[in-house]
Length: 354
Ligand SMILES: Cc1cc2nc3c(=O)[nH]c(=O)nc-3n(C[C@H](O)[C@H](O)[C@H](O)COP(=O)(O)OP(=O)(O)OC[C@H]3O[C@@H](n4cnc5c(N)ncnc54)[C@H](O)[C@@H]3O)c2cc1C
Image (cartoon, rainbow, N blue to C red; front, side, top):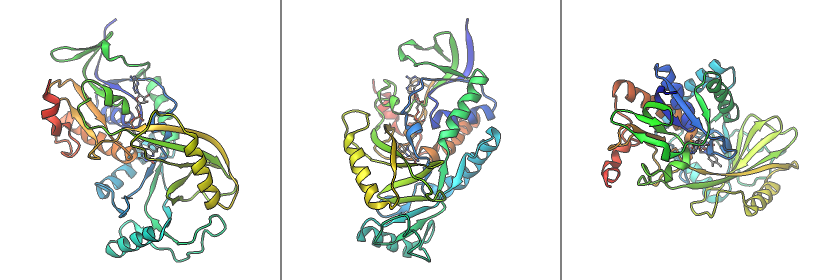
């Protein structure tokens, strides 16, 4: 039986979630095909929206615009689905070295936005071993991915917007003004399939730079839950007495599996840093769909206009996905410009080569 829809989306990570959310709000129909994977990037991510980045602690790209937008977007989402989708968890940034302390103080003296210094440097002596003090990064938001993804998936399934299956590219046919996938006819297909897009023949020429990250989940009783704590690695309150600890950033790796080396190294770091004892509950790894120039890939293929991509969020999926999804849907609806730094039209020449 032939079915038809406006958009076929591949993948329900944070990208497929937000893109379909805004498509639905704009009145479009869609179907998502997603093959559940335990360790997709969105399932392994902490959910941090950090307004500053890098060794020089500079502002994250577009953050002044993105931060207020996403606070509203996640709150609306949470109200609609009955969850707390986002919460404020400012980062307590313990300085891991004298250079990092200096970098923070230098940056703070140039620009106070998102940074502050504590009144009481002794505040965390009962919980942590630290020598060089700490600064605060605020506001920092924590996105509740562990509830957002399943609650939205339930909504998709209840409305027949989801097929839990592996998408097979060989079954895709491009027709003059639409695409055909098995019995489904759609005006356009948009790939939101994370790192899988890096080996999709339509998009292999895009400069993806896959980046592996490993994470531990630990359990600790009676430990503070109001902040994210940072000391080279992040310690993030997850739920109940469970904390997310990570992560690594590896540009070269053999596979996407957790390694003993990471577990041993982080476990030793935690033993030095934390005063209470902890128990390791889980250990996972995933690959971030990062890009060489650290900007996402959004838009329709310059040659195959019925094929689109919403991807390349790198380390910033939680903040960039809602903001860029809204912009992408506006583009679809009104032909408004996609943010030029992320529009895949910037790769028209290489994408047009046979
Ligand atoms: C360790 C780690 C920590 C991170 N921490 C943060 C953080 O704190 N804050 C932040 O903003 N970002 C963080 N990130 C980055 C963030 O995870 C990514 O930017 C984001 O999750 C990418 O989302 P996505 O939807 O593009 O991809 P994914 O989450 O990978 O989703 C892709 C989906 O497509 C499905 N799929 C793939 N191929 C197929 C197929 N053939 N058929 C059907 N379905 C398919 C997959 O199963 C998956 O559900 C972190 C990443 C890692 C690895």
